[in-house]
Image (cartoon, rainbow, N blue to C red; front, side, top):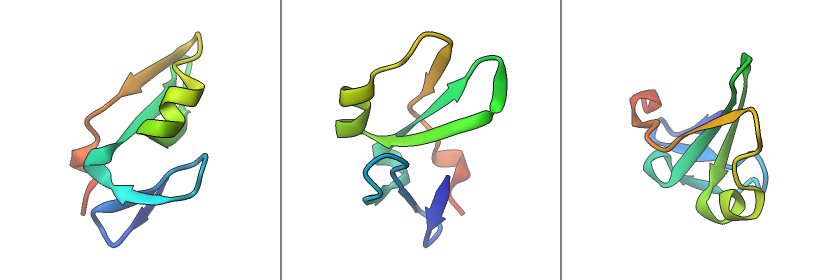
Length: 63
């Protein structure tokens, strides 16, 4: 996850920058080290693959 200016993050798929409240985080259930930040459009394209969980509120990561 690439945090920009403390309250913005870069989508791991399209590389656009969004406010942290406008993205979601995909995590692999068996390996918490695998995380991908996705904007709403990319999340719609990818969905939530089997074996992954989705966290919509990651505002606690803002600095």
